Length: 342
Image 1 (tube, one colour):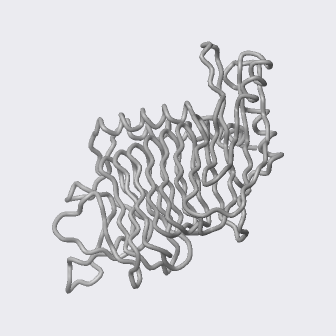
Image 2 (cartoon, rainbow, N blue to C red):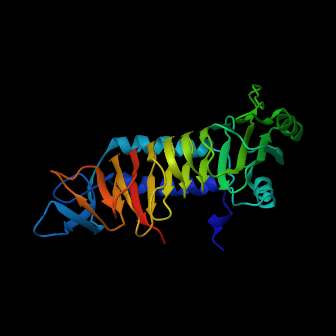
């Protein structure tokens, strides 16, 4: 069995980032031959109209060095190092507990506390605000019920078992009105201690959201509503969402997987400042798409027609199918990947 499969998720991500750092240490920008701005090979889709081109395959990279990329990598690696082991919504509670007991505590501490708490809310009106606290993560999944179910996965590492249990008792998960939040758990004795709460939230698909994490992951799946989503030092993932969505990651990867045949709602505006951006598009999708990067390579593995006015820049805008709502996915310091759904 692959030895890496036994590693915590954040360690596996760190290994991948270090591999990327090695590749970029020999050259950090892949560019389009002759233009020096993008790395996707383009050919005329209509010889009579050479301004319209179709991407067909990645071009061979032309390498130039960019110190900005090293700053980006340092920020992302630091973010990964300080993250707790992220819990995923698809894990069962038993699987999460086993993983927590096995890996949480790999920092030399001797006390370890892993706990599941469950609570719920009746249907709510207005936007739902979720605050998982420092080092906390949020996994949101839409469902057809009119209630909200919350599972709090609590993990604590401390110098002794008594310390770990005491910190866990301080942690409070509150759900009332239009707010879910985690409080408590602070410690200033200077000893080696780590804690985090991951909230798995099942809610009605049309629930408006206002969610921010600090040092933790955020994922949203199967929700179509007005959303304001932010992460600082953590990954941000959206799968099968719709509505009027604004998503921003600082020092973390951004992953967007579109589903269906079009974007349902006003549109998507998603960006990461320091991290890779990944956009997955299904066949026969209809939308106005914009994607790109300022400092990083671009890999487009999805056939599309784009109109070029002047030089090829770091960002590409195009209309897929019959068009539709705008979908924007960009990164400032990091690679941009566009792929087709499998």
